[in-house]
Image (tube, rainbow, N blue to C red; front, side, top):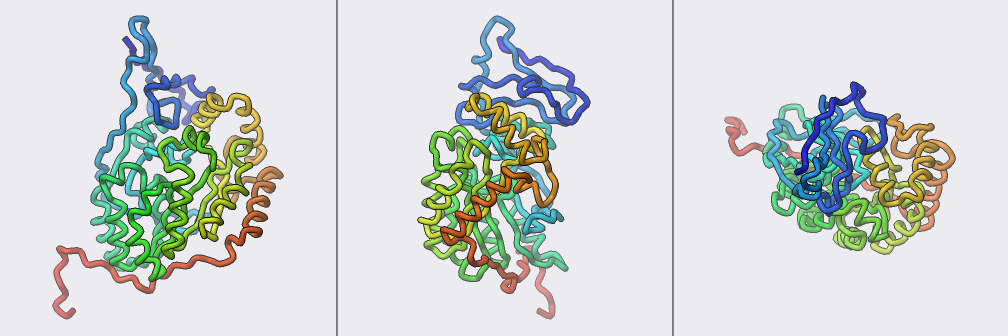
Length: 380
């Protein structure tokens, strides 16, 4: 039967060995419908467990990866940041982990903080925050709270498949609507249309903006790169319906991967322009920590003829490294190749009429919510 062997990990926070050395690739049937190919232990674990065949039965006898959802008993829901190169200083993440399974996801390393793998664990062992709306009401009503746009979807997708059942995102929007608090949403799911009623009402008060990520128009590439996300046509239709309803909407061509999907920049923007959306942005592929090896493993398995070339171009855009996290350049890279990608995007946007206006939200409608258990003021 299949066994698990425990190997002591090296002291380095992340092995520089080729992908698969500390965790063999999982069989195709076990990971069907998933993005990552392996499930190596997180960087903080002292041991790495590797499945091997002891000769009695094959590894294919192991069960497939199934999605599990655990309650995350968080006590705060608004996360703060002071990053100088992003447009918000606070965010909400209703879930941890993401079933979409995008192999390139820069959030994968966060699962290591939970003692889990950034690989297949990230897309199959999920955590939900069912008390997020109540926590949000409490934090918005705290004395001295100063409203400013809250971003949702910056780490994991708030409209991933499990949202259909748990509806945490919808309840968060209900709280924000009642409080008159502005929100910016990033997703790649057509499930956002379920909440079009709330989004439309908020849009009339300048309280919301929505961005959908469109990585490729190639159905085959989308299926293997982001297996449980909405198909490209469904994302384009979601953009069309949001724009038609008057919700400020933009597209994110993200991530741009050299020699894999960068040739589609213009075609994606042309398809989006046909939906009526007129705002766009892009982000270059980011490979922090474990994402590098997971992406390399996926790329070698699916595109062996261009794997080396893709990483050569990545290093040319990252100062000779696989990734550079320097603020202001981590999203766009540096060097001639990065400049060319940026210029192509700008020229296409100019030609198609993108980004000629700015989407603005307001805090003028904000009124701190009053929790149900709060006693009314004697002099109110």
